[in-house]
Image 1 (tube, rainbow, N blue to C red):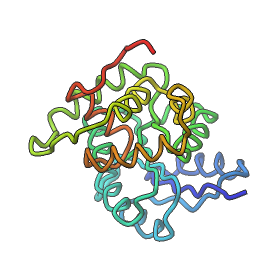
Image 2 (cartoon, helix red, strand yellow):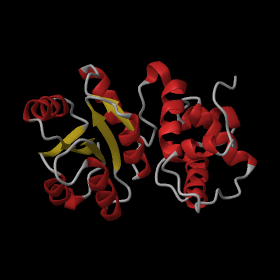
Image 3 (cartoon, helix red, strand yellow):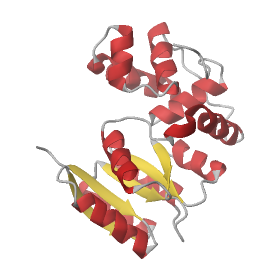
Image 4 (cartoon, rainbow, N blue to C red):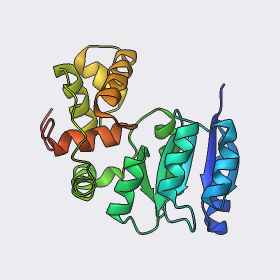
Length: 221
């Protein structure tokens, strides 16, 4: 079994040690190390981890800039922003830099493990208890940051359906089942969406599509 390589970027030693113990207890994960700064994270990421748990409130080179630089080197890495305070504007900046979502540090241990699994599978990682509300808050925070020069590409009907499914919290497998296509086809459409919208993650694609009215929240499916 190929292990998921996980890097932790966290400047609070106790929390970093707790994450290390959690990850090392799971045979499917390979713990690559814990960096306490953005600069150290870039050094430890030379081998390109699969998943990065990124504190967005790092001193010096912050989590947003670290995310952007890390993904320039390792575009396939899945960065999950972690925060004690969940400041929406900062989280939105991390997502715009390429993070696939965020998780509060208050999450239970089993939920953190599930976060890593979902990120490795290419899914959006957001607090599940209020997905629509979280998307709305992030949409508002992102709105002020949106570059007016960025133009929404012409999405096909199928691409819109896939983005709608993601906004409803559906996994790639669930979307494929709904649309009677394969998960591989869903992934191919997502690559096309990323190119058209100029984004790096599903979450950023959903937020941009919501902002432009291409998809909507709370639509029954």
